[in-house]
Each structure stands twice: as structure tokens, then as C-alpha cells.
Figure 1 (tube, one colour):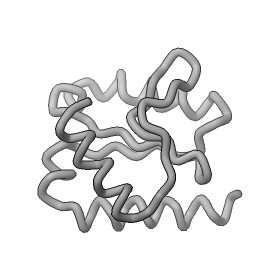
Figure 2: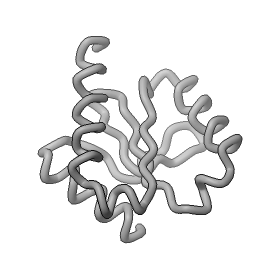
Figure 3: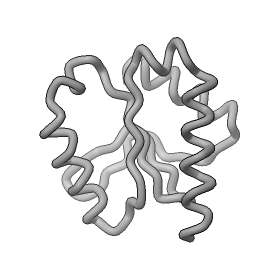
Figure 4: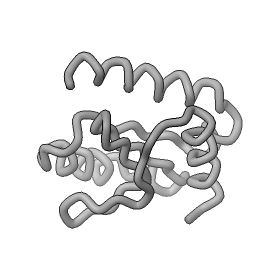
Length: 101
């Protein structure tokens, strides 16, 4: 686990959200899976953001699995500097998913 993932995990714990860390979905493994809301959270390093095609293909595969309704990506720098914004984005996604579940 990376420092960025540890930081995102601290945010989730502070929000008292249930999650599974490093959850396998098909042949992929996601950083965090909020099972109750079917949301995947990815803590992306800077290198991952340079390959948007790969990220899009991965997200499509996750959504196709039927287990995932939404995938959120957070850049490492964003997680570290803007924790309030990260919390707000996660809460917004959860609120949106509550309408679908």
C-alpha cells in the first residue's frame, strides 16, 4: 500500500464508511470498494493519470462486472492537499447511489 492509499483510507475511516481495501473484481483489483454503495475509489499516482485510455478501459471493465455502479479517481496530490473536497466528492457519490439502490 502506498502513502496516498493510506491517506484515502484515513478519510474513509473518519467518515465512518464501510469499505474493503484491495478488493478483487474479475481479474482487476481496486484500491477501495464501498460494497454498500457499489462505488470504487482509486488513489491514482501521477503515472497512472498519463494513460487515460488504460484508465477508461479499466473503468468500463469494472462497470461491466455488474458489481460497480460508479468509479471515482483521486490524484495523490488531491488526496493529500484537499481532503475536504475528497470527502465532499465521496459523500456526493454515496448520496447519488442511495437513489439507485
